[in-house]
Structure formats: C-alpha cells, structure tokens
Amino acid sequence: MVGLLCSMVREPSVSGSDEENSSQAALSRVLDRSGFEIDHWRVPLEDVLASPDFPGIEVPRTEAWGLVGRLPGRGDGPSLMLNGHIDVVPAGPADAWRTGDPYAGTVLGDAVHGRGACDMKGGLVSALWAMTALRRSGATLRGDVMLASVQGEEDGGLGTFATLARGWRADACVIPEPTSLDIVPANAGALTFQLRIPGMATHASRHLEGISAIGKLWPIWTALQELEAVRNADVDPLFSRWELPYPICIGTVSSGVWASSVPDLLVADGRMGVALGEPVEVARAVFEQAVAQACSRDAWLRNHPVEVEWWGGQFASGQITEGSPLLGQMQAAHAAVAGGRRQEVWGASYGSDLRLMEGAGVPTLQYGPGDAALAHSTDELVPTSEVRTAARALALLAMEVCGTG
Image (cartoon, rainbow, N blue to C red):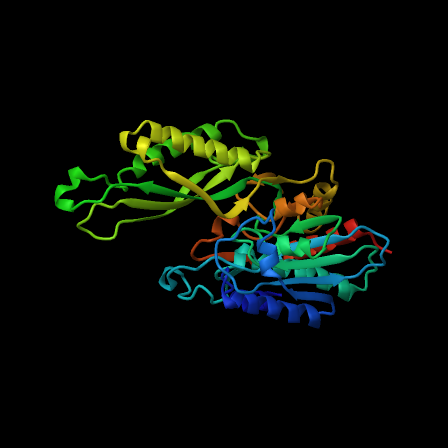
C-alpha cells in the first residue's frame, strides 16, 4: 500500500498536465490488476464544458479521463462510492522542499512526503485498499462498492461532474479528503473572481497627472476586508473552529508594463468564501455590491468603476443530506479500528466535490488521512498510519452500508 502511494506521488499529476491523464491511466491498470470491473473513458470535454450547470475550470485541457472501479455486490443492497481526485496543485520551487524534490514520494518515519501525498493520493490509496481487502476477503456484499478517481477537482470539479454525467451514482459516498480522520459533513463554497481596476497612464516623472491602478487597489482591498469581517461575524456552529470560515483572499496581482510609467490597469484574481446554505448568486451579488460601494466613494473609480468577473472554479457550499445514517455509520467504523482515538465532526472552510455529489442526491461526507493544513504546502506529507486506519475504516463502512450476505 505504501509502495503504491509512493509511486503515485512520483507522478506529478498537476491539474491540466499530461501527467494528470497518464496518472489516471496508471491507476486504471492497478484497478484492473486488482480484479475490479473498470470504466475508463475519455471525457467528452466539449459537451461537458458547455453544460449550463458546469462548475467551472481554471486550467486548459485538451483531454481528460474518467475512471470508476467497481466491486459488484449481489444487487439487492445499497451501494457505496468512494470518490477521490488524482490531480494536484503545482509544487513551487524544489529547493523549498525538505527532500529537494516535491515529487520524491519518500518515506520518512511514519509519513510519505511529496506533492499530493496528503491532498489526496493518500486517501485514494486508502479507498483502493479498502476495496482490495473486501475482494480478497471473499466477503459477499449485497450492494456495489465503487472507487471513482476524478481529475480536475482542484480547479472546479470537472471529474466528478463528468462521472455523474456518465450515469454513475450510489446510495452513499465518502470522499477521503484529508480530515485527520475526523468527519467533515459540510463544506463552505469558494468562488474565483477577477478584478479589473482602471487607472490613467502617464510618465512616472509626472505621476501626479496620472492615476495609478495600483493605488486604486487599496480602497477595494479595504472594502473586501470589511466585507470579510461582516460575513464571518455569525457562522454555523459546524464552522466555529475556524477564525475565518468564509475568507476573501486576493491571490494574484498583475499591473504595469514599464517601470517609468504609471500603470493604467491592475488585474487581481482571488477567491471568495460562500457561507453554508448561501446561494452562489447571493454571494456574488453581495461581493459586487461591496465593490460598487467602494467605487462610489472614490472620485476616480466613481466614473471608472472596477469590473468584476467570475471565472474558474465555482464551488457552491454543500452539506450531507439531513437524516442520512452515513455519518453515524462512519463514526462507528472509525471507532472500531482507531484504538480509541477521539474523532470530531466539523465543517471545512474550502470547497470540494461533496457539493456535486449532494447535488445529485447522494448523501456524502469527507473522511480521510492527513492534515488539510499541509495540503498545497511545501513539505506536504501524509502519515502512513492514518492511510492504513482509513483503509480499515472504509472497508468496515462498506460492509455496513452495502450489507453482507
């Protein structure tokens, strides 16, 4: 199990890269060798991207592949899907990593290090090994167990959207995202935005006669900080552990073409948190209103307002179906294998594919190995002990959900 995880980390399956596709193909071969029924298909990108409810994409792709491995049951019981993404975010400078190689896939002590180890190839391997244990044990399950490996989760949810569009469904779903083996039954949303802030160019020696687009970022920045504070003043109890469960963050800024010129345009990209249960349209309107009000208070922006565009990943919030037994079943399965480790239930401040599964009517929660604080970080790692514990818990969960003969 650890060997497979190391080899998967060594494949730099960055969202939108060729390796994202080749890693999916490699996992398909693993599932095939493991004795599962395989559906490995080329996603009809043109049709999927044109769907009116497509959740967004941030990096270009010329191809993408879906993958589902199935352990069939007798056909007279509920089914369980384990859903995990194979794509990872860029690793950044190699010299920032302890191993000197972000894709080393190195075992140090009780952990596998490398980009994607925590988010979320460790969880994918746990899910695969849970299914492998069930198949090798000869247990007769009444319902099917499926592993859906998806691409494009990091930039919007392409893979799960395409998997649902192909017709794959289940009566319950667990996404083994890193939760430190806690249970996450709800996610906040996250909307990618772009701000285009105008200025007026002139020679830097006479900059008082121009308007710096960089300088006009500050009133917008201040307005967004104020909006963030208001939106986080009263939150759902599931999110009480977070100081900012619904953050607003500008991640990239680009402005200017010459050091001796006053810049006439600033482009900033960022992400806005969506509150639990808040419609995406409402969140966008609140954001746009805050920007418009900031513009109205500035002499230049009043007549040259900031443009707001929503692009890329558009993650709605999501929460497990009320009354679903899945949360209690997951707690019981974990308690049976975790040796008394305390488990908590909380909402995640980031978006995930949970909202797509729930939108399709599939009760869904997150439970998996690794600390989400290490996701997207340098020196990302996942404890191998947690990968094993998650695999055992997911195997027990499958027997509970699907039923045994």
